[in-house]
Amino acid sequence: MAEASASGSYGDLGGESVEFPGFRSEKWIKAEFDKLRAPECVLEGCDLQPEYMTAYPTVGLYPGKVRQVRDQMKSALFRQALFKIQNVEVTYMDECRDARVLRRIVQGEGSSLAGRLLDMRNPKDVHLIREELWSVDRCGVGADYNVRYYKEGGDGFSSSVLPMSFMDRYRALRFYLSGD
Image (cartoon, helix red, strand yellow):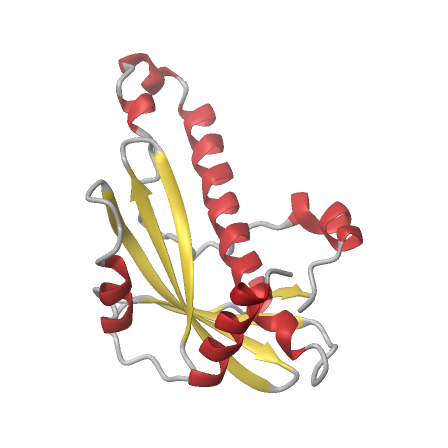
């Protein structure tokens, strides 16, 4: 697994490590989807507040509800990124059928070159809010992914995933071009 050289937050997940299958089956989604929660270090310190919430001063009267909305958004973005990682991991099912384990998350400082190049195609109202390096254990072999979170316009958020290794990028491309 790649060593982090950035001086951002380091996150060996330990007890918060997340186990997930390489293949996203309907059975797994029904049983686990609502249970998937983002580890604490995911999007740590990011303000996930849509403009529609800031437009109403009375929102401050409901801090518990605001916290709940932010946690739901964080979990949704986490699941979105995890699903995109599964799109790569499913291409390795012939070599490794065991569950994958998200072991480490490192907060990036700034933005990777590959990420900046890909961002050039984004609309003007889409802005990077965080880049993290996720390390996944694939049957004892490390697989690293750059996970990037964006704010889209005033109220939208999204994630993108860029595998770090050439082979994983090739397999991601193969998955997305296959149409399956």
